Image (tube, rainbow, N blue to C red; front, top):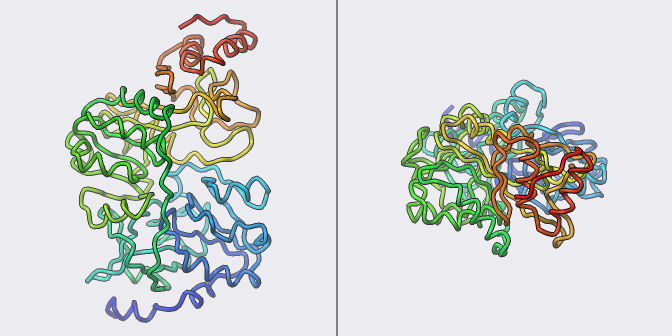
Length: 438
């Protein structure tokens, strides 16, 4: 059959397509902006007749998704590897589960059936003249799930951009096709950075050199950092995600990829996460290459970029340099994502370096994010052996090749002044050593 005949034969309605899902199945919705609300809404209509359908996901920006609501308990079980505002409450109330898994290992877990998937539900662009649809803004682990899931249900949506790289799937790889034209999920734009974040952004930017290749995320702090990169030259991008903040730097010529040693003159990512503006910006834009996450986030691949700089954030860091970026005590807030992937990739890069950026305090200055010890039950996201630079609004601490005492003193020097004496006293009490003043 021609691809047009295959397409027509597999075309159905959303309500009919989700009838393929049965109790006890594990389904994976599209990652981030590729989640199909049309298909998820159709699935929710079937909730009364379904039991224990596991919804396994990475990042979701569908914070109104009904499947993690309390009334869905018994019908749907949320299992996520990256908690979000929508899924945290389900985890905290033991209505959902958290799976600890580094982002670049997702495809392997699906491929090797460590996480067998019954149904993959996603969104793709309309097919081209050869019958190929684009995965658009989410290649990440979607590419592998097209191969690994027992059933693939795809919403073909003209609002999904066509992106370059390893993003294409043929209509013959889609078991059920549903047509829709609703808007893609968007990340609510962040508030304008406050003076504290502005200063952190300025401090981080001081570590960036002309010709560096950056990994930087999405959010208020990344936006603040990027606002201080406008005087840099020939920056490159190799990052798991690109968002709205990057567009101005590309248009101004600051980010052009000319000095990249891997994929020169291109920005490499595994998914796009932002507003409609960035989705339109990457549409058919050859400057962007999207590849699966087991390539983009592979530390060996990352290290092939000379002058690679990994910029990540944290919730807390102790005086040994251990970074907690996922949890406060046992309370899960996010996940490891690609933080350690990029920190280790940057460490292996020629002239590479990594940066952990965080505000010095939380809860309106009541709590120091730099602590003598991590709270009980807190998992370590990035080990002390991996940490290079730590940045707060009070400056930069270089922990590379430093003794425990030197590390602690450097971190205290960038803690909020209200907590510095307390941190020195706690360190002396715990380790029996008086720290020098910096």
